[in-house]
Length: 433
Image (cartoon, rainbow, N blue to C red; front, top):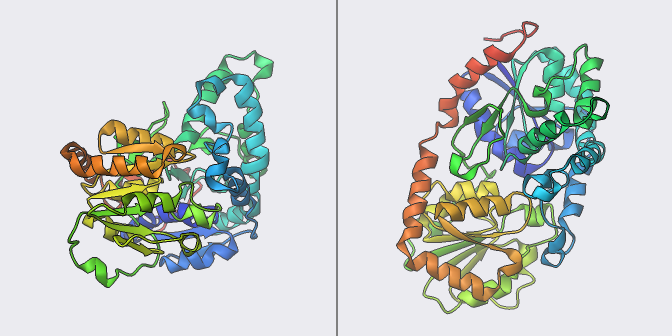
């Protein structure tokens, strides 16, 4: 079959999708990956075939960076899930007034901005290539627009907690309680306009997919009622990487890794913890610290402890198995990479779904969590010592590892995707051998 991936031009989101694309490719299916033209080099660097569509216009991620704050921890009050999706974690915002107005804003200021540069060209390519299945990330509504236009089956591939599916379910339940004439639905109206343009009508799958591919174990995820989820293992992909010589040798002391993710410096303006304070607090411990710190952040440091190795990047999937504990920001990819090993976590979370994932990880017993506003050097030191000294954290981390590895790999999920594609695509599509 022919499988078309569609994603906005953001490296962190794209990297979640690469292993699934390669699983389909190595199973013998034709795979194409569509995004804006300037992103083609990132796609081809992953060994995938790029389809440049539309024009380069990345206002969505510029807006997300602005929402994330320009001054890291000093702007912590603005952190969190973007409206109206923050109703996912804030019951006081789970009202019709908040969600109906907020969804209108989200469609007008975010979803439309992301889809418009790609949608028309993506539909044109889909009509030419006739995909059987379209896989899209939850922020790439150009994907279901194109799938609906050609009758392809389509699925969301999550890059974290399904806040979008959860809030959509909440919105629909509140909508049903409103008087007949007040049941507005900005997302359905917008997507429906595209559907009618291409000879169809809005169907709810345009909002949440025929099904959803979820790369996280049930203990770390929150499912939206009524949606169809297919789980698979998270397989780390971080782009080109080289294993350094020092990583080939077993550590002589307990190794603690510290990583606050790439988006903090690639998208936002820096880390939301005081790196110097954290390093100083661990300086006298008989441990080896490996901290992946961007050069821009390293330049801010006044001193580097003797027990610390600072590198701008090292592949986490190679580093994590050598560690006795990992301190991270609870970014989904980072957390899921560490969860493939029996290594305890300390999550220093800040925004979006990081607090949710950190809390679930702590509830599982595989680690501890601190909001960055509480992540002083002293607090980090105390929590790291607990992870190293209390065996229960490693035991629960091993249980999380076992739960993760019990899920089907992307390759093992492919036959199920073939079955679901056959079920959901319309007869207008053409099957390719």
